[in-house]
Length: 193
Image 1 (tube, rainbow, N blue to C red):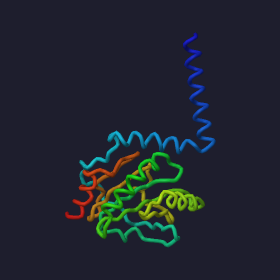
Image 2: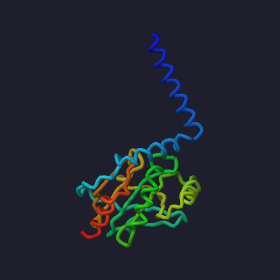
Image 3: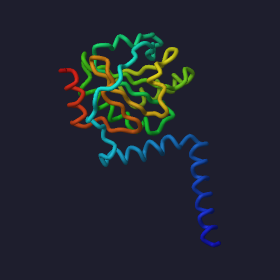
Image 4: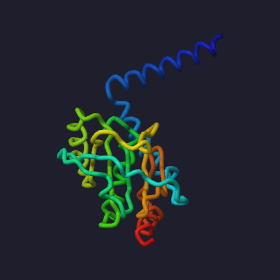
């Protein structure tokens, strides 16, 4: 009986801590910090052992942070690094610095980065503040209307890599370290095919 009480007390304590972190908004930061530590181990490095899969549906519209609408089909013929994220997502925040470093090294006319925030429209100010506070320079967009069925993902962050022929060649769900030599080579090699 004593062991059962100790277990119950421990569970209640853990629940109280999680509840406190959630209510105060600190859970996202805590989650981001723990994910960042795990990323340093290399356990979350992006996979480059991928095969072509389904064709990507470019038939939707996004908007930049100035509210300018952009047909996603403008990215046809390029390698596209498409990341779905949100400001309230700790695991998303954990991978953002690595994505930014990757962007600074490989973005070109042939490789397009689309950082697609799925925050609600009324949270655009939070998106802009987060990007500015972190000094990120990659292009950030938000949905403008519906997204294709492929992008209705069950969890974020989710990242797609689409080749020049419009095929999804990689899909990573969860916090991932994309800033590796192997992944950089993978992206650059896609531009040569």
